[in-house]
Image (cartoon, rainbow, N blue to C red; front, side, top):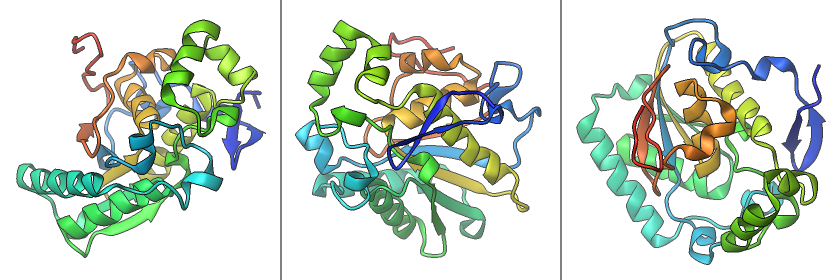
Length: 239
């Protein structure tokens, strides 16, 4: 066992080593070159928290509060329409797996309704937003200023923010569990900006500490992910 930290309901616990080990030669640490399932990631539509510009990563707040705005719902419907036109999907072999926060639940349910009511929707805690500790409810501008002046280690040790290692462990674990299921399928993973960036880094074999270089998805944006995928970076490069 190692002592890397993870958060469940805001409580610290220990992670087993199996959650790590992704690299360019072994993305997701799965030890194979072909995935059983086809995966897409989707960021939730605009939420009430986004309008306020505040961080909501605590389950006590995010599970029932800060749902989608009217604009966020329209974004999801438009994204679903474009997705349906650009991809041939077997509804019986397509599944949506989402974070259980309200904004992602509403996104997943609306996506399923727009694509076809036979699509199964499941929720996984592992896809939740990053836990922000004492910075819960703070403006993103204030958090960015703290990050600039004090650094990420201070946000983790002093304010109790969830480390990237913990986010990596839980999002990769969701994929591993899906890969262990019997029947191949298309899976849309509905989550939040940070967890999706971390997961994209894992799929692409990028060093976990560099996930913030990846261009985040926009509200309700859907992107396909695959092993050793090319990644789009904030500086405009793709590699």
